[in-house]
Length: 148
Image (tube, rainbow, N blue to C red; front, side, top):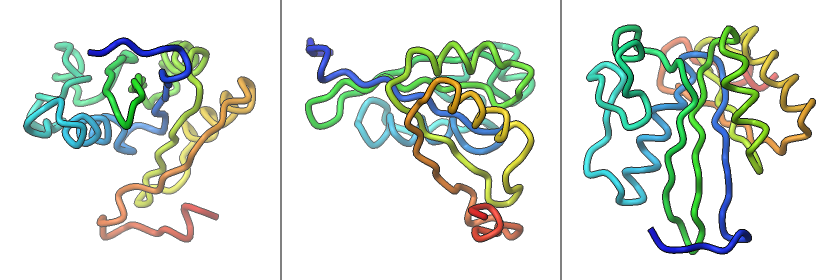
């Protein structure tokens, strides 16, 4: 990867409750940037950022992972975090080094307890956060309820 000055390096933390789609989004971002030639899936246990045995066994992220890509002259470090608030240390550690964040909301489940807890961390660290409503293709999806 090319050398970048500090102004052209961005650390983006992906946060959200378990099942909101963080790891899948990372896969899509890496694919669209041309760094991987296929999108891995949680079910197939072949995603770039969930590679530990326990993550494959449980189908969930347990440890924050750093993956990076280049996009329009910037190096973007993506921090994929666990969704369970039991792993708050992993989430907080990633948020502390991030320039901004992307919080995914599962529109089939709405805002969950873990989402509220993570949002409190966002306020604590005054971290700019973009909200993205995900899983809109789910039959139980309710965009308006999720946004409200």
